[in-house]
Amino acid sequence: MENLHYRFEGGHSRGSRQGLLVGVVSSGNLEVLIEAASLNGACEIAVQTAARGFGTIWQAVMQDFHARWQLADIRISINDMGATPAVVSLRMDQAVESMLGAQA
Image 1 (spheres, rainbow, N blue to C red):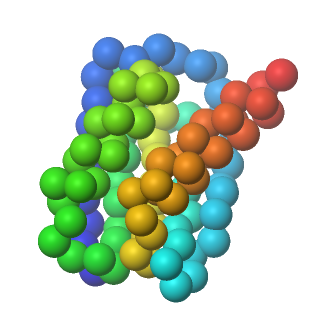
Image 2: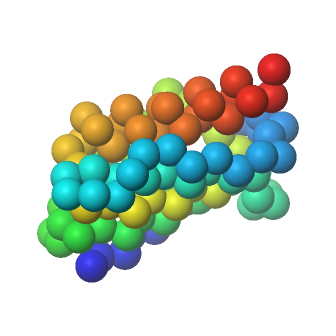
């Protein structure tokens, strides 16, 4: 397993208090846990992946995600079993959309 950590500054707080889990860890898939956290306005993402050596691809996917959502005071945990970058982006977007929908 490989553990990757990312921290992004300069986001916007969405005021969520609820943690949400989307996806299922199985062959070729992943789960995403998103939760509010006191991070001084940052968004932290921790990835545990079975696919070693793809750090630059993960970095690009995480940067793209942050550019889209610009979250603050959010912690995201990802457990990956070899999902493609498109599936990673889809699950992360699904988690944020579910979190924001839960606030309505």
